[in-house]
Image (cartoon, rainbow, N blue to C red; front, side, top):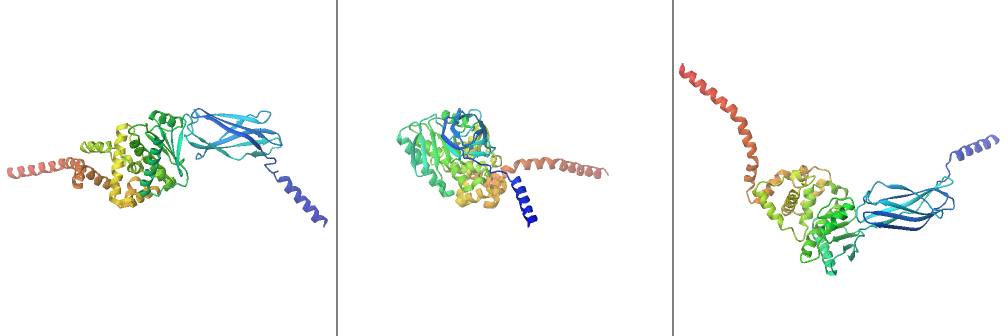
Length: 402
């Protein structure tokens, strides 16, 4: 019995000797939490951190909600626990209208660590006084123009979603924010301050945010009906396809968004006609990963994508477009995706589309495309044929001389 009792105490001593004390031994009291920021310049986090056990070290951790990397920065605490950390948003860019999550951590004098709850705030472009109209999860924001302008933006969003719903189911389980800047320079600066390249419009599908530039005036309805549905289509495609959205060829992604426009760009037709007549249409195999960087090439790429996707929709229906998108989501390359979805290679579809655009027959388009190869084959064969003819002529001359 004594040996058993001694063994028990020995095991207990070993166990307790190697068991780490609980990591959290005292709560962290967090008060007066606040965030003050100037968009694109700096973000200041404030709080008061206290604990029943003295705090020896404190940090703040934060990230944009869709970001994988968390920023962790040390904090200096005043004697009463107050602290303020200023983040330089002009050098370390954060997307406009992103949700930022943050929390505080502290190391105590006894070696324990404690953490606060997680807080969040929306990093709005607060350079402007935004007005807002809401219809369920759809929110239209603008800062110039009257209420009629805001209603026109909201109407354009509703109309665009109705069209997109014909192709892919529209998901409104989370908010959808449409921000209408009054001019291109305001939008450009917002995107650049948020680390984005400038474009005419912008959609951030992961945030459910659309940004466009429309000046209030006579053409406001046309521009709203063109730009807003286009960008909303990108958001809805992302919500429907998930992470595979990024595998879509650019011509398909932009083509679907372009046909969603309630007021299509009237200049697309003239650009297509000129390129078709001059034989300068861009091959779709070159539009899978990106569009040309120059404005003229990019415009033609948008025009071709809109026309090509419209042709595919007229030929194979909305189910064909969905099948095509899912083929690319599954990882098929740009050429094989059309083969699985509709049973036709991309280059054959392009030949048929070119005939559709130009009004020529498929046979004539194919013959024109084959012409360089025919010429090359002829030049390749002409030398041996000519040599063979010389040999025959020489043999005839020799035969006559005998």
